[in-house]
Length: 253
Image (tube, rainbow, N blue to C red; front, side, top):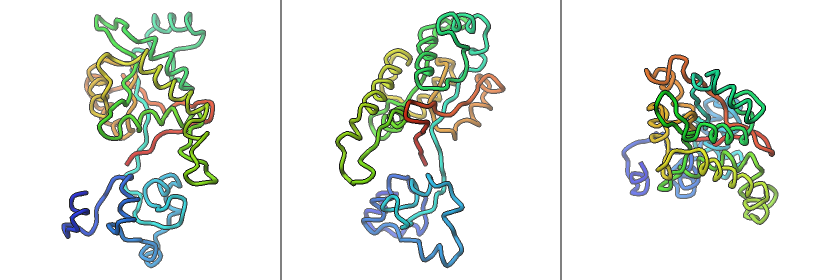
């Protein structure tokens, strides 16, 4: 698709691009501004979730200039081995260690503790690990992972009142704490050799019984539930947990 756009080709009139193409598509004349078309056809952005309009339709962001329709909205969430969490012996051990029930985490700190609890544990004769998280470096993977911690600790790309004013926002104390939390989760709760994982690797690790939890886009949840190894009630699902600055999750699509 990008080759077709950059070469000025005429292969298609309509395409579903990725969200990060909006800026280049608008600035370089690849995408047509759609405001007049929407008005003429009774298409209202009020019919879409605000975050998806900002993420998938607007350029510049936070302006009423629309170059696309939200077509395939997704968000990072978590799957977990519900059948493992419910084991009485693990419930007892976790309660003794942390003073709370082994359950869906309410915070990123709780998620980190659960991942560390399962790290290197023997489950039915197999060594398992805490969590599969996004670490891939070749494209967007690590960004789509670490921001699920950064935002929840107070990270912002820039001063919301002054474009390109970055100091104290991307490197705020909260942003640093969120980065350290994600690194600690990686260091203490992920499988060996998982330093370059993204969606496919995480799915494989979870389906094969290697990890207790998996970070991934919610589009994979029906496939998890239908899987003969981890589906049929063996898995549970939860949104990205909160941090001190609130509860946010990375959009994709």
